[in-house]
Amino acid sequence: MNFTRRQIIKAGAVIAAAGLPRPLLAQGPLNMTTIPSSGQQIPGIGIGCRNYRGQADAPEMSVFRETFATFHRLGGKVVDTSPNYGNSETVIGGIMADLGIRDELWLATKVDREARESGIARMERSFELLGGDSFELMQVHNLRGVEIQLQTMQEWKQQGRFRYIGVTTSSDRQYERFAEVMLRHELDFIQLDYSLGNRNAAQKLMPLAQDKGIAVLVNLPFGRGRLFNAVGGRPLPDWAADIDAKSWAQVFLKYVMSHPSAAIPIPGTTKPHHAEDNIAAARGRLPDARLRQEMENFIDPLLA
Ligand SMILES: NC(=O)c1ccc[n+]([C@@H]2O[C@H](COP(=O)([O-])OP(=O)(O)OC[C@H]3O[C@@H](n4cnc5c(N)ncnc54)[C@H](OP(=O)(O)O)[C@@H]3O)[C@@H](O)[C@H]2O)c1
Image (cartoon, rainbow, N blue to C red; front, top):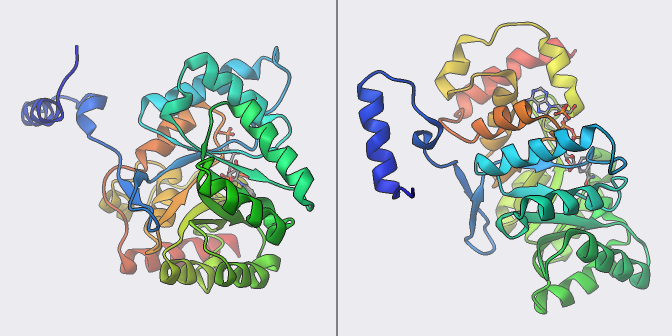
């Protein structure tokens, strides 16, 4: 049976009034982020697929599949991968085909070659492995061959093979060059490392993205797990309730989402319960500037 949005909201209100637990549907849609270059709205959280790799018959494949299915079922769309992540594109392509959800997702992958011809071969291979005639986003991985690859990517964007183009980094050693590329080219997206414990990108790159109307995918939102180690078994501070955060992961993701640029975290997630936890960060309130400062004051001594 299908429900209209109005029916779902109404049912949620009745259930809430009766003091009963709200079913998933009644939690409402995910918070959306607007892509400045097009006005398209996409969910404010994605999934990173760096660790989706292994043999087809490996036991973890069914866990990856279930994680992806959970992410999709709960409204997730934005998927980030790369030909650089082992056989991630093969694994993701297989899961999407299996679940029949390829066309419902917002797919981002990357190119990581110096030369024009090898870049073209790499991108054609991504189409073969991930399926479909177009991707939402193609990115130059870690600025590799950036000037040459962006030429091809611009052409393919004109042809409708990519809706958006961008560049990535995850190291502040590349930030100066990264800023130059942002100034020199018309980019729809950048992707960079930023988290409550790693705020260097907020000094120059994220404000520049805001000025230029470039959306930001945020990799390493947990610092590859470093933030979880920093907080250890500590209970959530009282202020977590003010932003509707029910886990440390949600605290860390909401910090990223609340940056005034169009910042969308893409946490690496290979467990269904992590996907569920992370998607929930895209619901409810976000910290304001004062609380963001309090969060920074909280984490800094734990990371020192
Ligand atoms: N230069 C680049 O272009 C670049 C560089 C790095 C990363 N990336 C992209 O960014 C994505 C994210 O980076 P990352 O995966 O390296 O680091 P990350 O997102 O900072 O951390 C991933 C780690 O957090 C764990 N985790 C996820 N959700 C959790 C939760 N709710 N509670 C507790 N632990 C949780 C994951 O465990 P499980 O796997 O067990 O769920 C994994 O160990 C990558 O997958 C990739 O798509 C791009």
